Amino acid sequence: EVQLVESGGGLVQPGGSLKLSCVASGFTFNNHWMTWIRQAPGKGLEWVASITNTGDRTYYPDSVKGRFTISRDNIKSTLCLQMNSLRSEDTATYYCTRDRGSSHIFVSDFDDWGQGVMVTVSS
Amino acid sequence: DIQMTQSPSFLSASVGDRVTINCKASQNINRYLSWYQQKLGEAPKLLIFNANSLQTGIPSRFSGSGSGTDFTLTISSLQPEDVATYFCLQHNSWPRTFGGGTKLELK
Image (cartoon, rainbow over all chains, first blue to last red; front, side, top):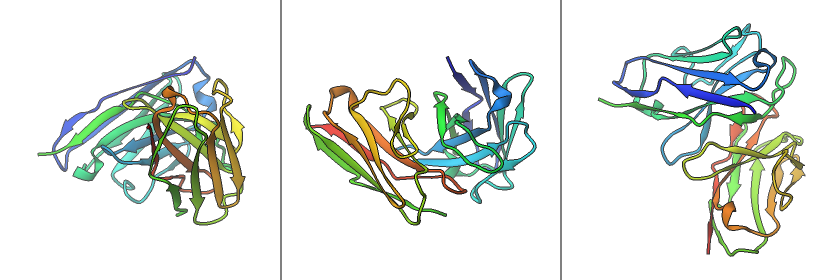
C-alpha cells in the first residue's frame, strides 16, 4: 500500500521559512516523479512544485518560483519542500503527491496523495 | 495556462439520482483529464483518468466521458458516501491545472 506522510507544517511569520518533508513507502520511490500541491482554506487545488524521479529537474509555477525549492532523497524515500520568503497567500494545506507516470516527454496526473500538512503564514 | 471551468459549483441531489458534473478546458487537452473526489477533511482521491478510465477500487457507478475541451463525470446512482467536492485536472501541458470544484450534497 502506498503511503505518503507529510510533516513540518506550522505557524510562521510573513517573510519566514519552513521546510516540509514527506516520507514515502509502499512503492519504488525512485521510479516516480513527485509533486507538492496546496489548497488554501475553502479553496481549490494549486500545483506548487514537481521533481523528476532522479531529481535532475524541478518545475515551479510563477507564484512560488525563486522562493520554494523541491528536493528528494531517493535513499531515504523522502521528498522535501523548502519554503522561503513566505507570504500570507501561501497559507494552505500542502499535499505530497505521486505522479502516476510523468516523464521528460509526458506529464501525468497524480494517483496517490498524503493526508496533507497545514502551513499558516501570519503575524 | 489552460483554464479549467467546472459546472455547477454546487449541486444538491437525492440518493439514487443520476448526477453529472462538467469540466470545460480553455483549449484542447485531448483526453488528458482526471477526476478527483475530496471528502471533508480528507485528501483528494483519483476516480477517473484519461477522461474515461476507472481507477482501481472505484465503484462502477462513477464514469467519465469527453475529449478535446468538454468532459463529464457521471454518478449513475448517487449514494450517501458520495457527498464530497469533485475536481477535474488537466495534464495535457504545463502547468497542470485544476477546475474550481463542484460541491455535491444530499437533498
